[in-house]
Structures are given as C-alpha cells and as structure tokens.
Image (cartoon, rainbow, N blue to C red; front, side, top):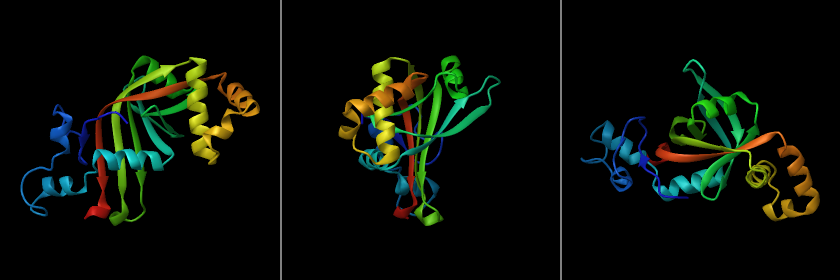
Length: 187
C-alpha cells in the first residue's frame, strides 16, 4: 500500500500535514484530553494496511447531482496497493464519479464500543473501462467475496465468466489523499 496521510478519528484532523507528522501522536500524556485519546486509538500505517487486507465490504460515498451524499455498500479488493471495486458503468455511483471524482470509503468492524475499528479513506476515484483493469479488479473482488484463490480464477473457464460479468462494468480505484482510522481496542 503506498504511503498515505494517516490521521486520527476526526474528519479534519491532520489536513495539510505531511504523512509523518500525522502518524505522530499529539502532545500530552495518554488520557489527558480528547486529542490524546484520538492519538491513542489511531492505527499505524501498517495496521491500516492489515485492516484493509483483512476485510471485504466497503461503504462508498460519492457526491450526488445536487451535492448530497450517495452511499452504497460494495465488495472491494486491494489491487496494486489501492482499494478497488467494480460496478456497473451505468450505476449512480459511476455517474456521480464521472461528474465529480471525490470519493470517501469506509471500512469498519466491531459490534460493541470497545471493539469498534475503522478506516475512512478520502480521495479521488479513477474510473476505467479498460477490459484488463476491469478483469483484474473483478478477479480480486470475486476472490474476496468467495474465498476462492486468485490462482483458481486464472483458469480459462473462470476468466470467461469474469469477462462476461465485466462487460457492462467499470473498475474504480481510489487514489487516497487522507486516511482517518480508529481502533477502540487500544483504549
């Protein structure tokens, strides 16, 4: 996963800082204030990468025609170090991304407060209809959804099925500008 700005659990914390500064905890001692609590629950870059690799569903937010958020849940895969998914070329999220490429992706986990973990990725979508990219992302997403190994999806029959499923789809890659993370198990 490429180096990304990593921030704590507030939307504007760390904006404009260099990535190394964002990884550093805020001043003070643990437990002495809200800023320190955010620093305490922030995931490291390696924890973020591991968390994203271990999950498969993402909440995707795009900007609708009138500026409203459009949310959808999708399966994703990490492809070449980037969060990626495939979707229909005519889907509302695709229409939104072609008009305004800003996108936020949320991957979260946990049921009780003390278990809550999540990563919010803010950035820009790269939408492509390139058949090779669509097939590569489709294979990654299919592997994540089904648990079938990528090598098993390289056989001709599987490639034919993926190509057929991908005919009306596009691949979407997220180019990350900022990462916000939290892991309440660290409290």
